[in-house]
Image 1 (cartoon, one colour):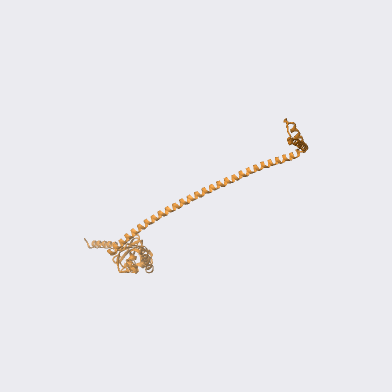
Image 2 (image 1 turned 90 degrees about the vertical axis):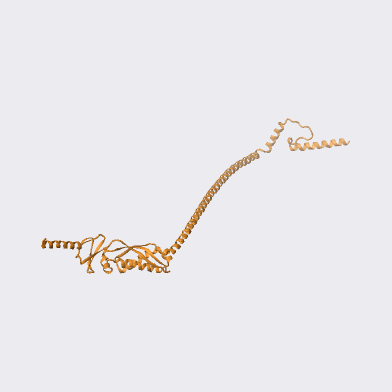
Length: 331
């Protein structure tokens, strides 16, 4: 093999190495930042293939989509001196592309260590040192996520604008075994109390339901009784009105009949007053005597058949006859 051929092969090999180390790929959702001699170069590259000077320039891919940083086994001391450990804390964050250069320049490509990981340790210890174990483990545990998110975002807005925290998830901390058992017993008692309270509420609710049903039934019966009473009262009032109308009709009929009888009697009396004259009465007397077939004997004759003058004369004759008879008896 000649020297020229060897030199050509070396040149091809060198060119291959240059291309291999100078050609690089930036994944989708990332940008490339470049360093030369430890100094960060101006500009960033988007997804795709790019070229750089091999062995002198290096590239780091920086993610610009949502990513989750996991902070594990975070120690935390409460205000009462109990040491607890948070097994895992997840911080969902995103770095905006226009802020990549400034943040990487100020905090390196591993910016999430000082801005996320270290900050989580600091804020969580600040929270624990201000509260006791009961508050951290039970009472205020549901607020740790939101408080940690707010504290992180406030510092990031001041120190690294463009890095945003979307959410924080905190797992239940690990506490000493003896204390954990006490909490479990306490939770068991609370559960029993809750069950008893719920059962009592159910009983009270059932009793309240029965009471309301009884009230509804009583109101229903009262309304029905009221309606029946009003119906009976209305029927009696109608009956009373009908009886009153019948009485008024009967009274009017009787009054009309009485007025008619009175009018008849009054008219008959007026007619009799005009008809019964002295001559008419004398005529009727004579007709009655002429129609009488009976003959009376004796001293006392019925006066009804004699006129007053004849009655007086007959009485005088009778008296004189009695006196003569008495004188003869004396002799």
